[in-house]
Length: 373
Image 1 (cartoon, helix red, strand yellow):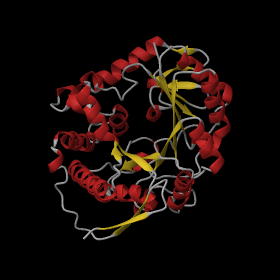
Image 2: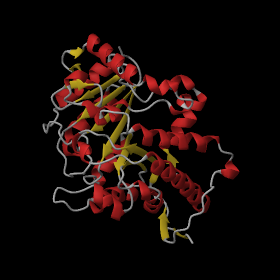
Image 3: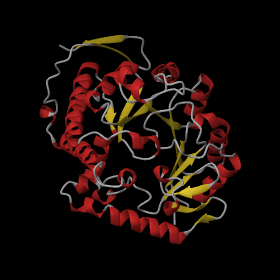
């Protein structure tokens, strides 16, 4: 069996205390370079192209381990795509330049404009973390490095979701926004996912704002869900392609080297798959594949399945029912609808709020001031 998605939890530690963190109960140990490289070698043994994603906790707390993996991948010329998901607060010029030089794609977590983000993404002292996040994004910007943004959607930020689009244009070096609906693990149990109708309306506003700002600035920021729908339109065989665990191709490795099917299922014995030093256990991989496939079979009955690709098992499992799926379905249906609309009809909403948005490119000093009336 071949691993196509290898997620390395470099540490369960984090310098933030976000209210919805699904990883808040993960082990606080630091992964050793030896464990990380054993995981990489296990994935490389499959002989196919694979993704290595550095995760946590906050992975940059264990930068030496990250560096050991990146250096090894390039030294051995492995067919690996390198990705980092970070809160951005520990980025420095030196780290940013290293990541860029070594082709490590960077994703930063941000949940809206400062007033919204500061209610969800907190420092350990309880204060909002926006300032720390923006310092990291500014480090990337001044080094001409683009990044993506992941926005976790809850009932508390869904009504202002389009604000993340404004903020992304303001920052200047954001090239993609992905939306991740709340997962019910860890501290995520204490919050609620958005209502389906609210999510539908939010995505309509998001797409309208994207169209408006693309027209005004000449630069379009991609929405991950829309890109996914476009990809599935070209190849419908990719359904559930996002769920490597369902296909037996996922390995989430914790700091001790234990392997689980998904980052949201770490520590759950039902989804334990093996250890980096002893390998994956085929019987456990097959059992997990079957559990996920059977649990998600209801997706296949949906008319939009071929362009949606299916829902997230871990999200359903975390809430122990299908209530969270309403919001995910609404989000994906709007992305599908957006793909189907003729270009002339892709901005159907009228923006009625009034505010100024200052937008700077990552490579130019000019500013465009946009005023909505």
